[in-house]
Image (cartoon, rainbow, N blue to C red; front, side, top):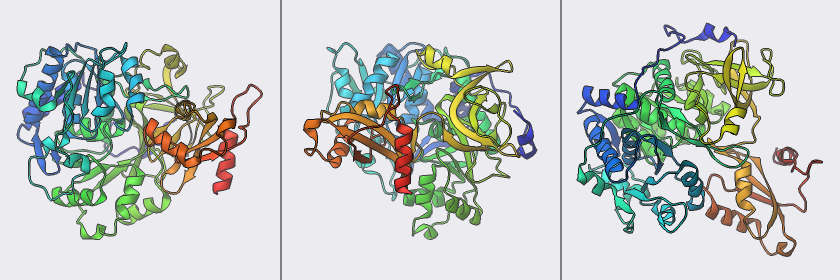
Length: 557
């Protein structure tokens, strides 16, 4: 890596950081000791202090240890929307010396099976609206099943009067049906059990977010307390975060960006999180005004929606000093509008494998639609993906990353791990599969994706996974998933389908879309379907998806 990016390094910042030799649990211990009566969470005007958060974390941990027999290194599934219970569960699982496996709450029952099988998990912590997706997996007669579920109701943490509009899922009172292998969240807390000793250290596994690959099967990214701490400390230092800063947390916490920016980083610094279960532009604006929020992380589609609010001028949002995020490039017009408001959007780049950022734009000198520069301790290069040699400045190649936040490999998948790393100049680099170029200032700009991934409003969709699901439809003979241009999402999921002969004329594109929405997470399901008589193939029989995608792009231009 060249040093050209150091010319624009944040003023008064060191180029490297010394990472602590402690677990994330020590961050909780420190903040709860320093600020016991300070709110860690403000959830629709209900406060949960650092001391109370720590207490409930220990109660969850103790139940996992004593009643569920969770031991050090066991994987525990965490399957719910943003809520105090998600945050408590996350630290409770770690306090039980176990590994958090966060699952996208948009996944449905059929998709859950892979996580259960792959992780050998026996316990899941979930919420009542998702429990119907979980309950089939509690069947003790199945060869692979969960043994125990803890089920939460978000509404039980609305304990103060609020004039904020609650999402429907938060308004709902407790109503899930009792199950012999499930227990209510409140019944766990009332037991008031005491956990055993903390056994985990910095290099033990703590969280395993899943990311999909071109094979279609999601893969667990093994992160230790130390790798997670690397991006916590880097982000807090980069943005010069302070203890008394308050943050709006709106990104989903199952995803690494929301997890780090809205959960782990504020725990480290001892700052307050204003938490929303669902994105709502009016509620966000009211919270900014009410709590003098000074920062929040968001994907571009949220920012677009926020600025499009015709009532925005009715709110005092002058306390905001920073907006940051990534997932997809910010539209030029929106980036300029933010600049005109004196509020540049600080874009960054990271992956599940790097537990959030490896690159960030310098706050004092950001560039629009830019990934940023490599952050503390990161050595990042642009290489020729075929010959694995470094590319000259300005030429397109694959991003590779060496740094303290890089994961330890894919869970139970040595082949995928081996294929994802290369040795170069005596260092091990992670191959991102993303194509980019580096400008004369050392800033990185995304160009394309080497891997076949669709980025729909920040949600990563892997075509092979969706295709596998579509092939289960009785009318579908062949299917190819491509990225199709979309004015709001940037890109969306489109299915090109060849029907079986006896189904032609008897099923519509809309029926395929409806069926797909019932089989998989909504963000993965095709938003467009087009019937073709044949899919073009290469000499080896592989569907020429790139050709189909290029043809679709010409039609939608």
